[in-house]
Length: 141
Image (cartoon, rainbow, N blue to C red; front, side):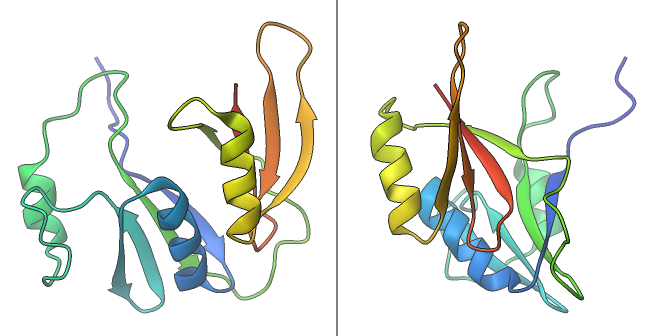
């Protein structure tokens, strides 16, 4: 039996709002200001009212109950005092929404990200990207 459920991925950022907008533009979702510099990318609320005031507790109460192996959550960007001297050990692995990895790479670069390197050689290949603050993430496929 699981003792933890996935809540969200939190990323330190010098400019939380800009990074939230970067990821929301690439992955979809709604940019929400949680106050005190914290900005999240969340799924649209269940009734699609993205422009109304956000009540996180009410929103979470309407989500389906966690299912083992199913990830439902937010990307939360929290203020950092200074840039990280090195990329973090944790990163996002993403897939091209329509299966076109080259188009996804081009969209990331057009949005302000950068291609770091293409890796693979076995049954799985991936492309390492960096967001505008240098945080790594991968596009698998």
